[in-house]
Length: 309
Image 1 (cartoon, helix red, strand yellow):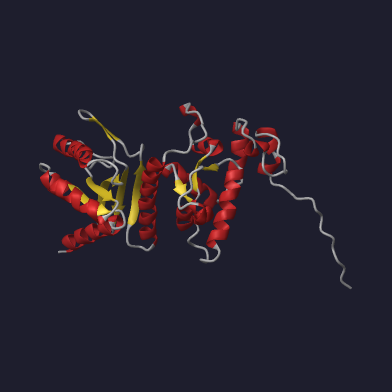
Image 2 (cartoon, rainbow, N blue to C red):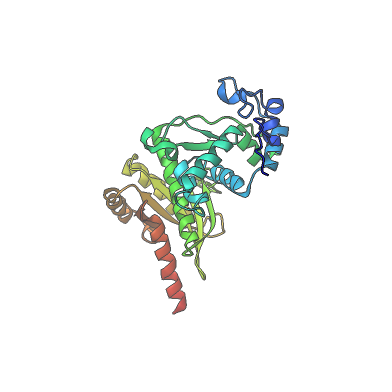
């Protein structure tokens, strides 16, 4: 004879949530610390970060590392990067669940500015590393303090998210087997110190590969908000660096791809490059942001064919 079992209302909590009170601050619901619901946020202690780290899944860690690399990423971009292995109908549900948990753990924080407005829903939320996420991914010996990020201007945020989008598209191309992304650096990690010209400040650097060829690119993400005169000044610095023999991160001088916002801007920048001195014609390229990754794939394919001949 079967018997019914009355379920307990008591919720078993893992070590990370049970020690929120001790290491972060008392919680008002037993799961979310009061620090997350109050403007007076308490300091995240090292013991709490270590304990949270023990309970993270491989996907959790990958998400945190992605945001460390790119600084800001939308929910939709994270879904494409880290939930593509799930059924299409399950991706948004799992993405919301996982990201909400990482926010509760103070690994991630959502910025006040949403991409696409309220109608975009949680996919339009923009994520950055919260204090626990910063402490988890930063060497304590560096002495760099963890500070909660602020919401930047729409112009700055749009520029950074355009860089994040290029990274997402490169990874999607890699997943399809058309390319291998050996390295991707977003600013400031992409910046390159030179001996005579000071600091080169590309928005991104990537080293991509096919089966037989590796190709290095510095990327300037152009949203059309700067004058062509300002852009020309930036591009001349790359030309000067090439002529001076300065090398990039992988001991080669990368070509420079200017990824522009639309076709009209592409035509304007293309004309600008044609007026610049050598070696502009061989070093500088311009494509729309939508066409940037297909262009890099095409260049690799051309080099593969040249090597095969």
